[in-house]
Image 1 (cartoon, one colour):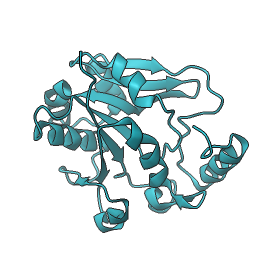
Image 2 (cartoon, one colour; image 1 turned 180 degrees about the vertical axis):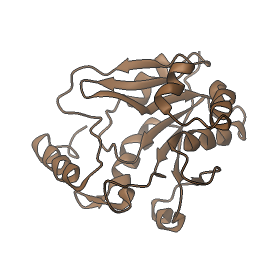
Image 3 (cartoon, helix red, strand yellow; image 1 turned 135 degrees about the vertical axis):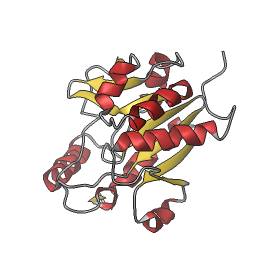
Image 4 (spheres, one colour; image 1 turned 120 degrees about the horizontal axis):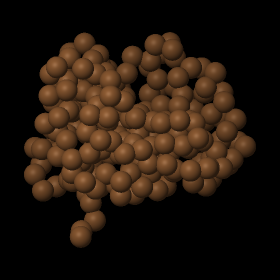
Length: 208
């Protein structure tokens, strides 16, 4: 069996209500938050793109293709997943799946995609990360075969990612105990401070 080819997608289309400013560009240890996710995910995937909702010009500096939400009105991150799967559909035989990473999860482990892909190798169901901090439904693997179900789900006016995983028999991939929380989620200015303290305490950036 050949190695799966994956399209990595940084999800950066949220409203950042709790942060009070555009979350992808909030500085963390001297660089935009989204840059941390890019650097962690890019070595693990075949290609990488960014899903955005507005101000696309601000992302030009990252040198990656952009996809904008095809459904207006901030309908949630599952729209970004849909658009990524449509990208895959437009490039037949290029990718087997999409792997998503929210822009506010900057510390994913080096085996992130590998672990998710093993659990999600069945083309009919998804997989998502789980660790002591909880289940992370957007840190997920989406085989290209789930596209019709994602499309139908959104067309029905549904948006909850957790429920969608349930619908397709999504598998929780347990990453187990870790030296630090690789799936730490940044939502508020206080979280940024905590993340920077974590980087110092665990030498994140100088090791993976």
